[in-house]
Length: 491
Image 1 (cartoon, rainbow, N blue to C red):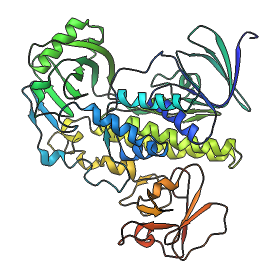
Image 2 (cartoon, rainbow, N blue to C red):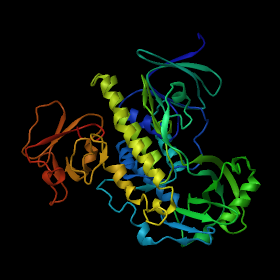
Image 3 (cartoon, helix red, strand yellow):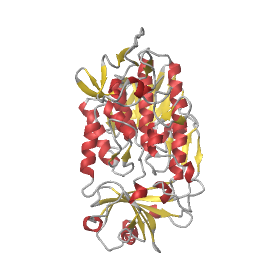
Image 4 (cartoon, rainbow, N blue to C red):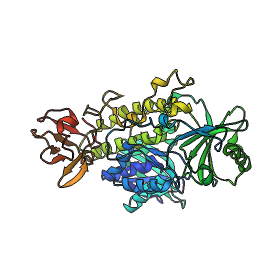
């Protein structure tokens, strides 16, 4: 033990995927010291999430990364745009779903300074990683967790770095963002419950120049089925990079054990022509939904895949995990600073676990291709009415009653509504007022005696549109006020 390097910090984050990196940025935003470790030496190259909700983009806006991510998104698609769905015997033989039907997706978008942003996770994670390096934060890839122990005042971890040297890290709290097979969750004895898998896939990330083949008919997803192969194409740049999710029966075959030549043969059948293909990565997965029974074991908190896994349909899992991290980080900051007692941390589970259960079920309901695009068919008619619009789930959830609301109107437990306002001569979103402290907002005839930062419409804040007012935005009288948490949710 004497030759180990000793490190002291507020939070130890285990896992350098999109949720772990996001948690690091949110802790930095709240001035909480942390150490992030990731056992893999580099960021993952395997494609996963591609759609980041307006709410997720609002969270990245709060740490100054909205424009950087949107810039990456503009470069992601080499031709055409993100969106659209096709199906057929092969990619080249596929036909487009009705545009009128597909456009129903996200049709009821709530007002926001951001919008749904389509960009492969493999392009967003480097933005987060570089931002942490620029901010000189304590992140270490190639570092492996050996063991952890808890005590009354924190967590002690033994870690081996990329050179083989040992480190002892003492942290007040630990964030387990170490993936679906979380060793920390298992070691903590936390069980999971959910919905069993109805389908199994092998995600094959590959290169093939199909630029001319898809010109004028780009897509987000393309479902194929023929006598040789069945599965789903996801576009990664609409030209040369693709992901094919090979649908298989694990009782009959194990494509994860196939060599590249066998995979290439299956891909050619799915594409519909003989072309040059390079397999870049592969990973098996299934459509199960698993949510941890609890999100906390004393001073250890689960987030991201360690807390919940669900099918990718609808883009719920990554967006849910990023919101997990944002929810917890400001609470940890307030507890460490002595602004709130530790009972505040109990709300992490009571708020976020039900969201994961609801989102997991919604993702599972979208296993059917038509249901995924909110198109009613004989195959999904029995449960079609249970499908909730993605925007509603991402933006209009209400913590206080564990439900979604029809419209954001300052209900307790909902996110404060967005409105463009003039503040100190600059145009900002009302959401830009929320950062690391509680904020009180009020109508033009209101006043406040508390210690919170206080903004009044008609005094410090002036709506950009003449038709907008405190009353129309909140439904409250001009002499009323409302208290908003650092994460933008109403107390």
